[in-house]
Length: 137
Image (cartoon, rainbow, N blue to C red; front, side):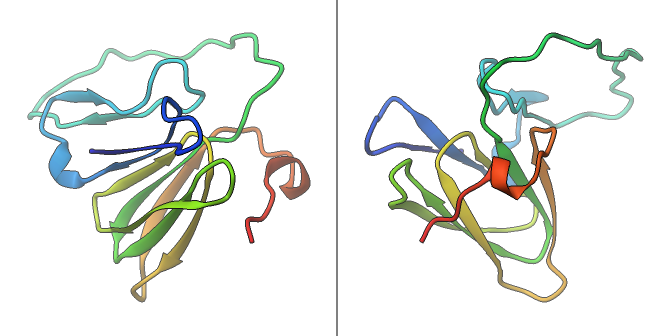
């Protein structure tokens, strides 16, 4: 697992790259419990069961940032990851099974193969582009 910290504030974890080969434990927490985006990788044996359940509504927070994750299913994706001042701090090629997580900072992606398939997971609700993101130039 590669953790990418801000060069402006070295204690601030901005991005994380998890390779398929990193997932060796039955459960591996990929995000700190304080983050909005909660991600866990699981490597399950046959007949591993989780009790049926549902989640309850909780009171929200007044201020939050969209956090996002990509999981590559097929093909390749180049991810460019930015610090909070828009400077590039990492450039990674993601393969099938890899996961990129952005807690803060910026990111961009380019598909490197035809028929690339990935899942994008992020916090919501989505309130439109003007309230959600700003371009990095």
